[in-house]
Amino acid sequence: MSHISKKEPIHWHTWEKSTLEKAKNEHKSIFLFIHSPSSKWSRKMQEASFNDETIIELLNERFIPIKVNKDERPDIEKYYQKVYKLMNREATSSPLSLFLTENLEPFYAGAYIPHEDVGEQLSLESLLRVVSKKYITDHETLAKKGQEVLAFVDPQEKSIQATKLHINIIKTIKEHTLNLLDEQFGGFTKAPKFPNASTLELLFDVYQLDKDKKILNAITLTLDNMMNHAFYDSEHGGFYQYAQDEAWDKPYSVKKTYDNAQLIQLYLRAYLITNNEAYKSVAFQTIEFMLKARKNAKLFALEDEAIITSWNALMVQALLLASNIDKKYQKDAFETLEALLSELYVSGTLYHSKSANEEPSTQAFLEDYATLGESLILAYQQSLDESFLIMATQFSNLLIEQYYEQARWVYAKGAFKTREAIYDTTIPSSIASALSLLLSICSLVDNNYKKFVFKTLELHSYNLMRQPLSSPKLSQMVVRYLKDDLIVKAKESLLKEHLNERVNAPYPYLWIKAVNEEGITLSNSHSMLSTEPTFEKAMNAIGDYHENL
Image (cartoon, rainbow, N blue to C red; front, side, top):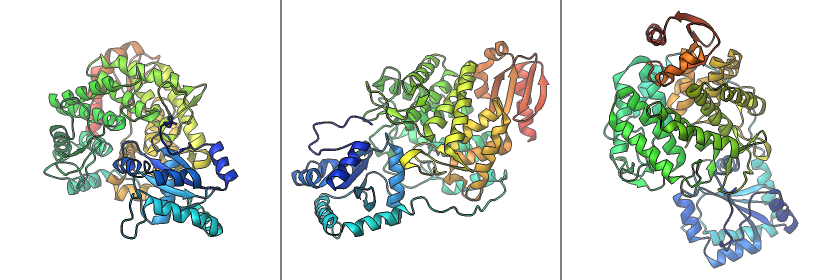
């Protein structure tokens, strides 16, 4: 967790054993503030309330105040989001403001708390006074309420309502896309508008599979509007976090590493499919912005960000894709990957985050292993270095051993063990990224991993087949699973002459694998399909196979 400035008058603590023991020893309630540095409401609450002398005094004397950065401890944030939803019957965004007993029983869960009383909503000062009094006079009731909430954080298993996974999901995806599309400005929601990168990635797959121009038009309409309005910083490069209006003209002026990494990949993919130079220009300008904005020589962290493993892994993926178009980005891609592995993968342990010039302390979560594993697969595709494939396989085994529980996946281990959701948020669902990694391992190493993919997709099939755009990356994995990967296998020396051609293939799920055998073979994940005399013939055979599917 990043260092908390000593200039803050509130005696903020970090979430650690000594802090929790302090709460017990002093018999004080914990005030837990989980914030995002980029959140408007988090900033407003800190500026308005946490600089107030009365609030400072109340928090310091009567509570143990703990501040948590949600980016650095997503396990804590996800856990207490569940608590908030249970207590309020609705979800919220940043910040979260909770009161816990010294034994971590939550008895109040709020979000933004105003500085002044607003109608029936108490100000933070009023709430602190009420809670501190009740904590003394009615502690037993507060503790009991907290225990009741905790009993429902991890609900009992529900019976599985499975549906057959069927390629008709593509038809549903297309219908829902055209129904939701803003035909004037692109995107799929009213204001505020987010880039929905994983939805657009899914639509690119669908377009490549059946060449429906309406789907391509939906994608390009959205990309054109994002890059031609203020949502894209045309002067300095880079995309903002979201637009506050439907026309992408009023951006919330914060840029995030994870957004820009995903959007770089989208615009590069758009360029490869359409040959529109404007898409390449925007992608490359965004890459240059990201490279200049690095606070660390080789790892990415924009303003107010820690160095996050999964976010940097997304940037590795973006740079590797870019290197197929301009070779100069290959050096940046592999330098970032090597820095990740040297600074955040220490003595066999992967870490989630670190601050500049500090050692990492928070161990990795499902999203870190899965996203970095995907990056290792792409690094192998770009280099044919077997060490990347070996490490990706090791990560796959670790994912299954530590995070997979009978078709369900947990996001984190330890005190904040929570089930991961299938829905994409700022980055894709960790479940979907894990399945993406496992499908690649099936094609390149061992097909036996596919049973874990099928069981996961089967568990969620009812929701996926009916509402595929609610979980776009997992729906993408359904399509990939049903269509299957194609693999071109040949000697390393031959494949190295054609490394950059894979991304131009007409089929979205193509991989290359170096083997010590003569000739070139085209296979799917479980059997050989044909033998070809040249790489060009193999690429033609992919097109023929694709058309006959």
